[in-house]
Length: 72
Image (tube, rainbow, N blue to C red; front, top):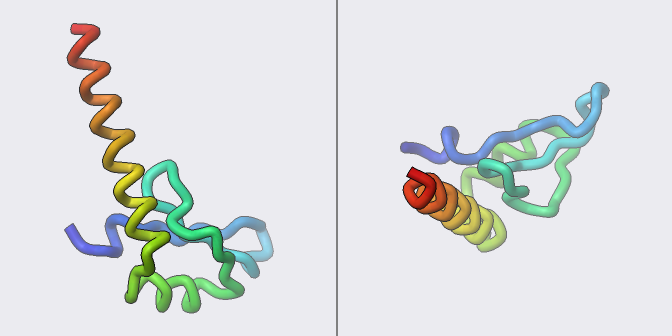
C-alpha cells in the first residue's frame, strides 16, 4: 500500500479553492490548502499530525472488527 491510497485530498467547497487531507474518517491534518498541488506536496512528506491520524484510523478499524467478532 502506498501513500496515495492512504491519504485522500478532498475539496471543501464547489469552487475547489480549499482542500483538506483525510485518512479514512479522520482529518489527517487540520491545515487547509489553497490548491490540490499544495496538499499533494504535504502528503509527500507526512508530518506527525498525519501519522497520528493514520494510527487513530487503524485503532478505529481494529475496534470495529473486534465488535463485529463479539456480535457473532
